[in-house]
Length: 102
Image (cartoon, rainbow, N blue to C red; front, side):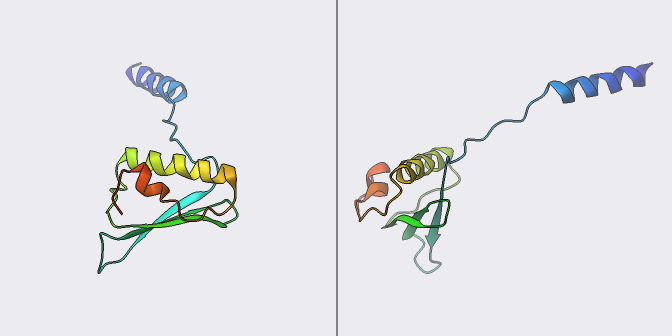
């Protein structure tokens, strides 16, 4: 009887539980590239779904990509760039988004 109750509880909890939905980029993706010799210089590129380069910027600061706030800002910028779907000439978008001095 005890094992039947435990089994029933496990089945009910498995059916009623939901996984956490992670925020995903609507379209496209971004890549951050750095050099071992110069880790403070990073190049950030944004691509469309078809791997077409939409925007590229090199910054002289190290972004902490483990922070959700940084990932969210890059995802939002990627969505905006994909909405325009054309290459944007250097406008320092990332430096402005993170208040970086260039």
